[in-house]
Length: 291
Image (cartoon, rainbow, N blue to C red):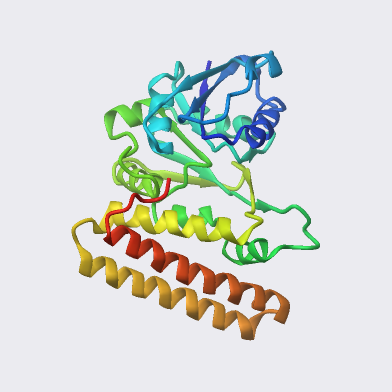
């Protein structure tokens, strides 16, 4: 056995089936990987995935502490094999995801890989008729290559030796967002982070604007917990810079892309602006950050 694939899930069982469908079509030998689904205190009943995917070595375990990072830590601690493969319940790994990753680890005789990651392209419900949210994400989607140059990585497409987590650190389970950024930077300070175009996981674009706004509210909360707890001045400065970047981004697009797309981006940016400041004031009055 080589890989333990860890997937946290919170109620998102329909899309998790798509993730498992893709893992069920891997070009890598099924006997060389296991799948650990970590149910993060879902309110809806979990499906009988073992019956749905009898050919996969699949386990479902539970983690009651709220947050995907707590769930990932539990999955890693319950992993039987040497290499952890992380993805999310709404992601679709490419059919060669594990096979291509194995090629890198096979030649890594001295265990020099800290994190192995790759590209995360978006896909849409209808690529010829994008919603407001999809249009926004078309221009702001995941850039894992840029993340890797900044020595960071998202948990949707992440491989590491299990020993890395034990020797350096697990995810900070007090965070609800930005925990993958925090841990990847910690790990890459000790061992290298590598990026490969051949390690691919597909991610659905958000379709509704409220999903985009919620994403940014969650990121604002995560940034506060990770960087600015107890530093109100720094948090205000961050919010002003964040808001300035959203406004200038949308204005710039008015002059650089077609009118329809730029108008959609302007509307979404406007709603992100107000949603983010709403989250800011919720944090100030002591409300919980978004999960």
